[in-house]
Image 1 (cartoon, one colour):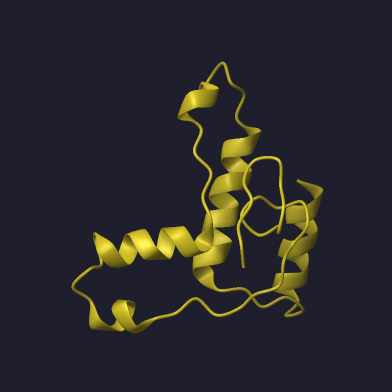
Image 2 (cartoon, helix red, strand yellow):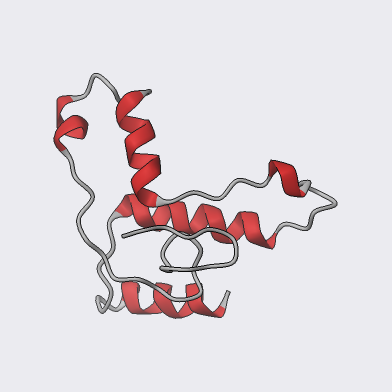
Length: 96
């Protein structure tokens, strides 16, 4: 949580640029990670990587949108401690 807070502060101050897809995925993963297993069993907790979410969006709900089809996720800096943005994390590892 401290890593997400530090990243959010830097982003608000214009020090950390991040594509919206990556921010939303990281926020989802942070919230999912913080929910106790008595509310969401471990087998129902799903963590995602920004690139895989974009790929799924392109092949499903936004499949017919030319602008989405031509969009490529720009490179972004790794944020240690934030699942989905960290190169390696205990919840999910996402290649960048």
